[in-house]
Each structure stands twice: as structure tokens, then as C-alpha cells.
Image (spheres, rainbow, N blue to C red):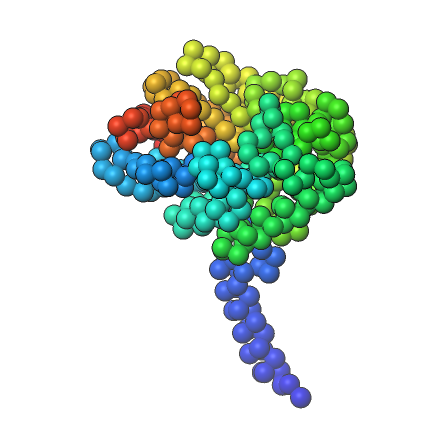
Length: 351
């Protein structure tokens, strides 16, 4: 028979062990660690491929350092965004390479620097964006039910690959810039909004099955385009889609960024009022040759998103700031110069 004293000792031991488990994040449900109050982020997906090509980065003083250390310690970047393709060309560092395993290695590296993690699931073997949402080669002949099953199983696989590396993402985008849906033609929103919604549900449910606390994002480009967002997000919700956050991209020019930021903030407020969703600015960028304008743009959108009422503005991510001028046949919206040193742009993230 257990005495009262023994029960008391065991209870205190249980309480202490429970508190230790909570303090170390052992929840038994693969839960994400607490996300930052406001994410100041960078998509770093090209980093490992650039390193494989021999790229090095210097800080503003010309000292060669780990690019992640520069982002975090010099510019207060606290979050990393990483894309994952289904079956990419592993020999193409620019338009492939990041399968689940490679993405998990990069995610662990960022986590070990103290960064939170966002995954962007491109349900494709290469780029998925407003102009192309191509099915992975292996999924081309699938029925729609098989497509839903494939989205679910692939998402679980990616999440578990991360988990096995010790990484539980704070956020997962179910698709990338899905202005007209995903996995065309079956999931093209202008053809069948319900199919698009069910594919979103397949990804959302898969994420939650591995980590119930990870937040899912539906991400569209042109954050200033309220009509697009009402049609797409409204259509998803009216067709029963489940997701947590609305993601937006914004790539203005040096001459119109202020107007575009104001339009994006107006749209963000409308989305929250209509649908009760928080907002993440998943991608921003501006030409590296306009560093002063880029710095002002970042500073302004960061401040205005963080100031959205009720804490509904969750963060801002710069897309591939580590890109050298002209990388990948002409991408010029990174934040590094040809001499290996950063532009002024990322100073806009600093408080």
C-alpha cells in the first residue's frame, strides 16, 4: 500500500519532471518551439547551392563570415524560410537541389543559429509560382484522389524528415504563390476552386498530423491586389479550406514602393477583417542597385506590418538576400554586391 508521504514524493517528482519536459520543449506531439513575436526573416534557400558553387560572403567591413551569422548578428534576422521541392534535379543548384533531406540540413543549420523556420512546399519538381504550378513528374497521371493522397504523404514525409533532424517548423506554406491554385490543371483555382481547397486541406491536415502547433500559410503574390485576395482566399474559405495565415509577396520598384506598401497594408487589414486571419509577408525584394530605397522599403513595411492591430502582422521575409547580382541568369533583387559585401538594404530590419 502506498502511504500519503510516498504519494506526495511521487507527485512532486512528477511535477518536476513535467516542468523540465516543458522547459525543454518535450511535448510528445512534435510541437514547434515558440515563434518570435515578430519574424524578421530571410529566404535562404539558395545558400547551400551557392556554397557548393564556391560562393563566399563578406560583411560590410569586408570580413568573410558565415552568411547565416551575418544575417542574424548584423541585421537581426531571426527566421529562415526554406523551400522544398518534390523530386528536384540534384545537379541544378539554382533551380533544383532542395529535396526534403537537403532542406532539413539547411533548416537545422539555421535553427542552430537560433532562427525559427518557415518551410515553403512547392508541390512540384521545380519552381511553383503564379505562372507555373506543374505537377511533379511522378504525379502526372494521378487521379485527383491520388493527388490529394500524394500531397498529404509528401507533406508528412517532409515534416518527419525535418523532425528527424531535430527541427519542427513554426510555419509551413501549403504551396507557393498559388494565385491560381496548384497542381494544374486539377487544382487550378479558376477551373475548380473546390479542388484547390481540398488540396490545401490535404497539406494543412498533413502538417497538423506531425505538429499541431505549426501554423499553415496560403501564400499569394502581389500583396497590394485586394481583388485577387478576395477571389482566392474567399474562394478557398467558401469551399471549406482550413489554414492559419495569409501570406503575401511584394516586389515593388524604387519609385512606387511607398504606394505599394500602403496598398498591401490596406489589403492585409481587409483580409483580417473579412476572414479572421493573421498576415505574413512571406517575400519582399527590390533591385540591389537601389539600396537606399530598399532599406526604406524594408523599414517601412516592417514597421507597418508589426503595427497591425491585435498582433495580426506576424513578420516580413526578404527573398534570397544572399544572391549575388545576376545570379541564376539575371536575378537582381538580392542584397549583396559583386564584391561580396552587403548593400544597405538589410539595415532596414534593424530596430
